[in-house]
Image (tube, rainbow, N blue to C red; front, top):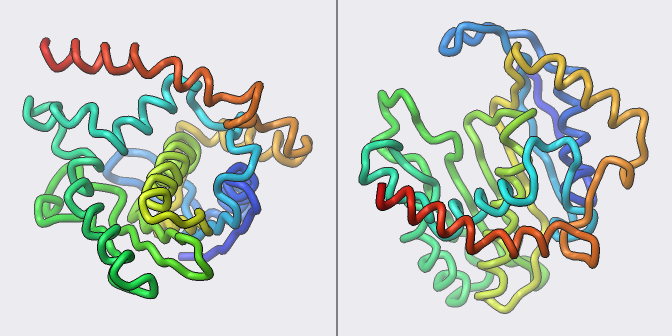
Length: 249
């Protein structure tokens, strides 16, 4: 499998460079589990300033409400009840929630630690038809900043990866705030960064838009006067109400 490293100052810049790498260099491979072909490569994205604006790509398949709901699922576990109800086999929040306090305490104890690791994969994934895609998170404090290293075994490039990255950057910020340090780099590794056959036209369209537009034309700001944050924050009560209604159902 081909190996690629892409970089960007901002989240959208790195994401767009990753999409171009997959479009231009991904190999066509059989995906027997889903009965289709896929375009695939192994890819690492380095985002140098994860909180820098613009933070939102117009190529991502979601709106402000959907993005906020995903962040709340990951950080706050608003859908963890689906495991108890037997609808889901896991949530990322359920897998990581008890490990976050260790990460914070370990980095408070020793800011140069290399032990601040969250293991997402468990024995429950062995033989599962729905194993976790996110495998591993590691945090480092270097130069007074909290850096984050992520490993996915498998990552849907065209539909899932942007929301994954945005949510994990918000988690990085939450931990950095708890530690009283700034947010450093975010590095996102996908051993299989892929696009399914049904989405090949979408990937083709993404590549065309990236090449034909300046970055500001295919991005939104997040935390600014006209950014997404206000609408995302305003959606929180409705998101919680819907989650509570599902829980009671």
